[in-house]
Image (cartoon, rainbow, N blue to C red):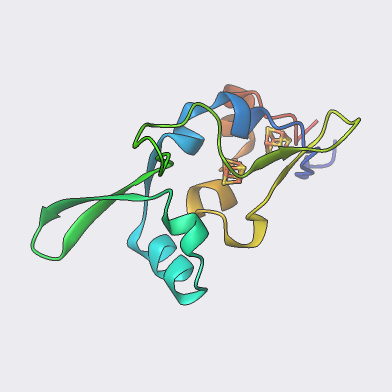
Length: 116
Ligand code: SF4
Ligand code: SF4
């Protein structure tokens, strides 16, 4: 049998149901990328928590109006009249989103249908 290749079918399961996709923290590199690109619309959903001198942890996604964690990623969009979803910051999404799923096993464990 040939090895399974990954093909995202845009089911949205990862973004909708895995809370560690959107209630987590991001790297300094992600924040630097958004700063470099001038994406202050993204950065306003990031909450830096100081950990020491010049060292932060960056919580995402935090509602800039309420200061609360979100219960759905603010960048997820359902396509009209389809059961498909897109990421509105696809080219600039956080590294953990870019790297999902890490493996077939990770996909199976987390309900990703991209290897079927
Ligand atoms: S940033 Fe994009 S890929 Fe990541 S959880 Fe949100 S919609 Fe999904
Ligand atoms: S769960 Fe898998 S197939 Fe579905 S949108 Fe996420 S990466 Fe794509």
